[in-house]
Image (cartoon, rainbow, N blue to C red; front, side, top):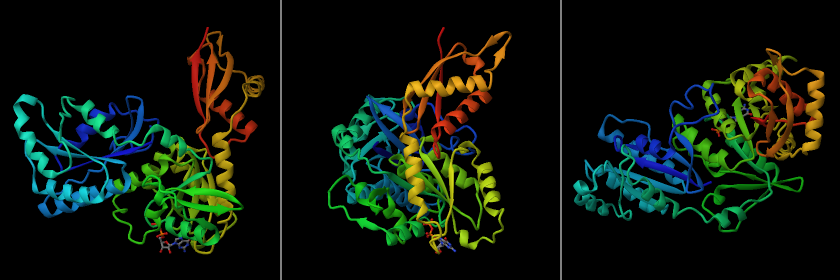
Length: 437
Ligand code: GDP
């Protein structure tokens, strides 16, 4: 899925444009503080093309100096992560000094840029004011009004023109496991990657593909190729702006997007924090397979209960992803690092497992015999049949007599039965309940 980033000065209307394109927020993560309130990214569809929209703004600088620094940071993160950049300006202020500088940076980066001029609420009134934006040399300025939702179609048409052809992105669809490492700064992501690269064969790809292929790393372990996504940014010594939480989320979104399995790295010497939960929420929301990698295990003083206590504490903070698998490692000493691949394989096969309808329904019938379905006022839940309709994550549709009777606790019971029967591990299972008379 292509990534589209919005860059622009404060008050040009980035959030309004974001909302005008993304529509109302929908999120399946309800219990993670901060993730949905401050919307940084959204999955969007326009004329049957899916893309991820990110808002690189966020910090409101007080002074001119700080403004320029913040604009530079925004532009850098957009250049690094996006396939297409929307450069947002404001017709009411005209072209400013800061706009000029951003335009310079974007032009030098050679990423597709679509220049939008916001707050054009009346085309007749502002028609002549739009011409000066040609001076930015970022192509034809497209007049929009985020607040009145005018010109959004034209803008997206210009953006879409830069998306890779659908055939191309399908050809990209390869069978190799794709793995993303995510986590706060300094938890040891680079150390883990460097250790893996040191111990395994690395394939240097000479195929000129999309810009993002170039920062993937192919590692061969036991004859199997694994694609580690977006690892160049992790391996680089200078990790620009990673400390800024917003950027750390943006990086996470773009890395997680194409991954099958996500390694969520946590620093054992520090424990699990709210920021870990926010980062984990991104992977959860996208239905990816999840392995919690508890790193720096060498620094922890251990008894025979320590691992269990750690697991419980993390499960408690990450209660929305109780399905996650755990591995305790040390990138420093190499402890259990070779188990990583085994776990990745297991989680990926869970993500892509397809259960035949016949077998699935046998298990469900057996489960309803072992534990009677809930009833209300003489009405009992009846499950006519169920079927798996998708993988990544495995998704099931249940046809029942009454949706209300499918209580949360019974659904969870069924989920657990399915998990046990088929060995789904490290992946969420998604359920849709449909009524049929
Ligand atoms: P990143 O920001 O997540 O990529 O984290 P780094 O890989 O840069 O690691 C941050 C710091 O933690 C560095 O000083 C590493 O040497 C140290 N570190 C990473 N992994 C381990 C580990 O397993 N044990 C110990 N003791 N230190 C580690």
